[in-house]
Image (cartoon, rainbow, N blue to C red; front, side, top):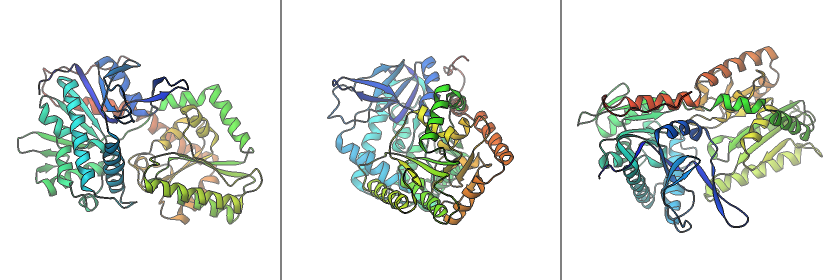
Length: 481
């Protein structure tokens, strides 16, 4: 394929960084999606004439215009998915095969051949769009588990490109990954990249070990040497948040007033505990609420002065596993509040909805204890957002040791989410901790989050990818401070 594009930097992700908004009068517009990835990459894209390739979230049957467009100064290139591909590629192979497999088989993964065929077709389509858009010698950064075949497919089309890949979820050990019938094809797909990035060193080590065992290439530490002499580096690049932006938001008068209003609406309790998660079986919401309910039932906490606020953002509600989990949590909350709550004083305030960043910052400010207990999580940015918002160096974080963030936030109360009694003990210890102890822990965590922010993550990865080719190539221009 002829290199005919003009973008020096191409981001390839499952979704575009915008959401379609339909107005009451039937007209539609685009709104920037929330999230640190967009914030981190937008400045580099602007100075670099970058392009972002992704799915709009709708189906090709519904979309009347899938031509590239510019929104908020960003060049966006839609990739169409049919209704069947949404079912097989996205809901099927991506989220019913890879997602549970990569999250330690918390739920049983399904292996369907027709899903795999759809996954290959869609990955080919993404690779072709990237090949069309990228300028000669450009950098292409492919993101996440939905697009693991894109690096190799793109390299076959455009060998002149520098290709990076970053996995936003955990990468499993060989014992789990080897269950995948198409394991070698996925590994070879990732080896099309020059740099394969993971949140933690363990993920990179798992990948290198699997390449050596299942593909047979030579490896040395974090390097894989291919038969043609090209080297692929697998390394850890822990993702983070825009810490300064969250702190500024938390300090704003509107958020301060809203945090006070939230506590007032809860009855001005002595203690507010908070959980914020996407409604997903990997997040450990059920055991967390059960642990809290037992603490109320045994008299450790009293609904008169303590409340647990759980925000569960709707997620993949067309998938059976998610619908079942929502029903289970609904029943648990209803039973707990029926048995332990009082009029105007529920034990658990359960919110099945999504909220803007301002409301989340207010919740972080209102909460005395943040409880984050996933069974498995690549990183988990919610706990970092909470830390960034605690500018008074108060508050406590109870964090699963199986979240990637636990490797950086070691001053949190770390727990095993499978150990209900251990979780209860950690929550009680955090609730009764001396203020000086809370300050010591929070100061250390805030320093880590501030120093290792999302800009450092993006810049670090792109700098290394930019250095892959010899001098003489166009270098990536950084946004001015």
